[in-house]
Image (cartoon, rainbow, N blue to C red; front, side, top):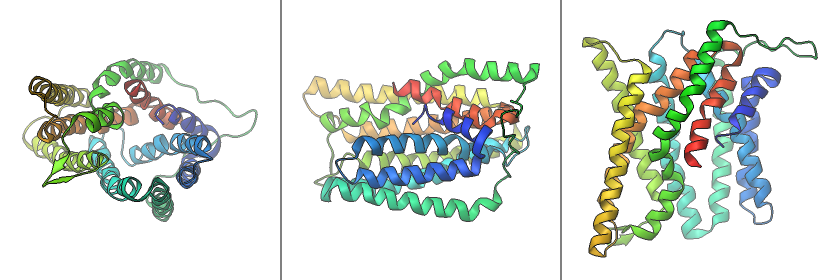
Length: 317
């Protein structure tokens, strides 16, 4: 899902436009979720989800970036608001789909996800008039491919060079959705008020904490800018990287104590990780997205946003 946004960006920039590509992505994801409710089409369902995210992810982000002028620092705030909305869904999804899946049956959990995706598409199409118009496409065999000037070429080169740095910075956050869940299910104590809570609720916890700090960081930089010069995107990303590392250190401390005492890792260490990681994430990912959106040449903006997600592909790997 972090590799195919490049294909989605090319499809939008050269063939369909952003709005149609986003709608296609939402339809593919809806189909993928509904197919996941059955056992037989499992691989086809995954293919629909991966291709759907590729069409959707980078293009909708480039539409958010298109709301602001190139020098407008509020773009970073806009992406933090954008991620607040995403995390509202991430809070609800494990509580509904995850609980249905673990307590009732996976068929019902995936089916509920499909219903949510269809509702999301309806909301997007209803609000489309508030987004910037798609760039005019040049179709046909003789359509000119976008030509980049020297300044734009340098910008693209720098954005590509930043990808390995961003990949390293994303390691702490991206483990939440793979290795961390497997480790936590085996190693952490999930007893809360005498009850065992589902492992999938960790994603809801992360989303709740992330929402708080995405909002908090956006407000912090607005207040900071009233009295002091506001740092540029690279400085904010650097600050976020240092904070994110402390979250991983909290997990390492919890695991070390559990190993020494022969117990399971206390939930408090996991909460500390989510808090510290969320503060770091709020200064890294939406700010990085704003940087790539601002610096990308207009003719290949959706493709460059797709390229931005490559660092998450590498971090997951």
